[in-house]
Amino acid sequence: MNIEKVHRYPLRVIVAIELLSAVAVTLASVRLGRDVLRLLWSIYSVDTTLFAQLPWLDDLVQAINTADTPAPTTLADLLPALLWLALALLAALLLRNSLPMVRTSARGMLVAFVNDWLPVPWENIRAIKVTEAGDRYVLLVETDRGWLTGWHRWYSFIYRLGFRPAFLITSQISEFDDLVKTLLSEADRVARTMATGRQVELQEGASSPLFRLLLSPLSFFAQRSSQHDGAPPAVALSGDVVAGEYPRRIRATLTWTAAIIAAVAILRYLTLIMTYLAITFPAVRRLPVFNQLDLRLLPTPWWLLVEAHIVLLFLLGVASFVYHLLPALEAHSKGLAIRRLRRTYMLPWSRLRVMKVTEFSENSQVVLIQVTHGLPVDARIVSFLYDGSLSPGIIITTAISNADALLQRIVLEVMRHHEETGDTQAPPFQSDARSDLLLLSVQSTAAATRLVEESRADPTTQQIVVGRLLHTLPAALGVAVFPALMLLADRSLVQHILPDGRLIVASFIMTLLALLEWPLVSLATAALDEMSGGGEEGARPLYLYPRVQQPRLFLMLAALVALLVGAQPLAALLWLGAIGWSFWLAAGLWSALYEWRGGQLIGGGLIPVVFQLILLIGYLVVRG
Image (cartoon, rainbow, N blue to C red; front, side, top):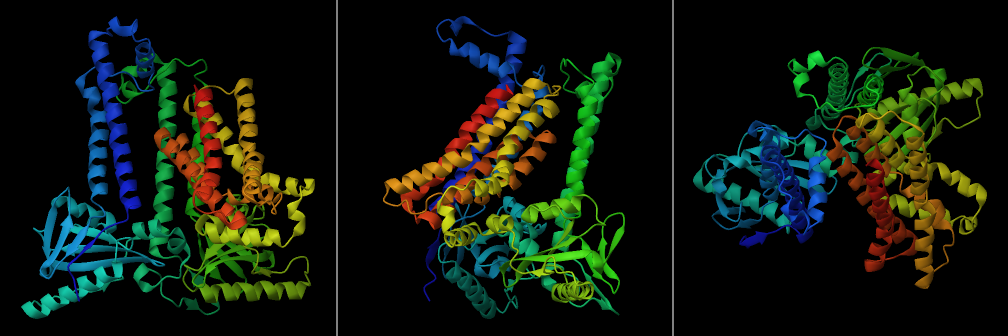
C-alpha cells in the first residue's frame, strides 16, 4: 500500500476558517483602536484641522465618541480591549490550525502548523479517540510529548478536557478512510517491529460531547445511547416500574446551559438594581463596584427597577424550560411520574391524551406525550414548539434509557384507558403526527421534499385560497414578529428607555415589514420559475415558504436571550446566522419545488437573504 500521501481539507472549509479568524481579529483590533483614539483625544483633544477638507472625518469622530462604553482616561482602561484582542488572537491561532494538512510516509506523519511541518513518528502515537455522528467523524490523535507544540494541548482540552498534545482529523479531509487505515496499520507495524507492546486502536468510547453536538444535534439528543455515552444501565425495572433517564452528556448539557442562563440573569438583575441606586443616590457612586458601573442620564430611572424584574423573570423562565426539557420518567401502575427539580409530578394514565411521533431514523425518534392538565406552564411551550398546539406536553427521545420498554408501557396504558372509557375523539397513538419544525431543523432538504410532495398531492394548492392563506398566516407571523421583539427589547430593556407610543408603532410597522417577506419572496420565486419555462406550481410557494422558514425561530430566540443578557455582539451574530440559515432553507425548498440547480438555486436562496438584510439595516436605523 502506498502511504506517501498528502491529505487536505476542501477549499470551502479552509476559506470559512480563515474568514472567521479574520473577522474575530479585525473586530477586536477595531475595538482596541477605538479605545486608543478615545484615550488620546481625552488627553490631547481632537485636532480639527482636516475637518474642512475632509468633512467625513467629523462624522467618524462623532461616531467613535458616541460609543456605549465610557471613554478611557488611563492606560489601565485599555486592558479590556487588550484582553479581547489577546483572546481573538488565541482563537484565530487555534482555529486556523485546528484542521491541519497531514502528510504520511513510512517513517511517520508531518502535521501542518503555522506554515511549517511537525514530524510525528508512528511509534509516538499514543491513542486515537473517535466521535461519531452518523457518517461524520472527528478523530483526536494523541502523541507523546515533544513532537507537537504546547498549543496542541488545547485541542485535547477542547475535545474532552484532556491535557496531552494532540491534533484533530475530521471525515471532511481527503481520503479519510485511507488515512485512518494508514494510521492504524503503520502504528501497529512499528509496535510489532520495535516490540513496544503499545497497541493503538480507535477508542470509540472516548467520544467528545462537544463535537458530537456540533456534528449532529439530532444524534446528540435523540440517538439511542450505548454504555460509552455514560447512559444508565440498559435495564431499569423494579416490579411494575419502568424507569428512564437520559445519558450524562444530555443531563450535563441541559444543566450547565440552564445554570449559565440563570447566573447571567441574576448578574444582570443585580447590575440593573445597582445602576438604579447609583443614579438615585449619588453618594453610593464612590463605593467599590458602584464606581465601575456605566451610568447615563436617564429620563425615567425607575424604569430600571421594572426592567430588572422583567429580564430576571424571562431569563429564569428560559433557564427552567431548558433544565426541564428532557426530564427523567418512571412508568408506574398508577401513572407516569415526571421528575423535575423541585418535585415529582405523578400523572394518572387517564390524563394522557395522545402520543405523537417524529421519526428521524431507525435509531432516532422524538415522542410528544400530551396530557389534559397537571403540569407547569412551560409544558405548554413544549407542545407549541412541536406542532403549534397549546396542550401540556412532555418530550421523550430515544436517547433515554429503556426507551423501548418505557414507550411500549406508555402506549399500552394509554390505549387501555381509551378502550375502557370509550374515548374516540382522537387516536391515542399518532405515528404520523410529525413535527415539521424539528424535521426542518435537522433534515431540511428531506423535510422540504416531503412537504412539496404532500402539497402536489392536493391540486387546490395551485390556486390562492383565502382560507388556506389564513391557515398559513400564524407560521408567517411567528417568523415576522421577532425583529419587532428585538427592537422592543433593545430600546426598553437594553437602552433603558421607557416604552411609549412611538416605540409600539415602530414595532408594529417592523412586524408588517417583516411579514411582507412571505408574499414578496414567494411571488418573486414563482415569477422566476415562470420566466424560466415553469409556472405549473402556481401558488404553492405561498403555502410552503412560511412553514419551511420556521427553524429560524430557534436562532432568533437565542438572539433575543443574548440581547437581554447584554451580549449585543452575540445577538447580532445569531441574527446573521438566522439570515444565513434562511438561505439554506429556501434553497432546499426551491430545489424540491422547482428543481433549480446551480446559479438559479443560489439566486433563489439569496432573495430572502437580501430582504432580511434590508430589514436588519432598517432595525439598526430605528434603533438609533
